[in-house]
Image (tube, rainbow, N blue to C red; front, top):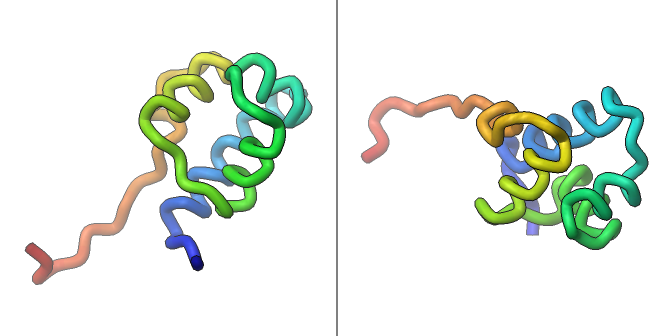
Length: 79
């Protein structure tokens, strides 16, 4: 199933922060209590994240969860 731009940008934000902290995917996974494969799939937009996972990632990356959430573009005419 193809993922939307939001999931892609979320994964990019996780990767950018991980790399800024000079963490490997394995190190991030360990800090977040996740499997390394989960980090890979999130960063490659092959997996969506639950709020619980976003919390774990934010704690492991030492940032607020809101810093991982990309802006969305609201479309007019949608209800």
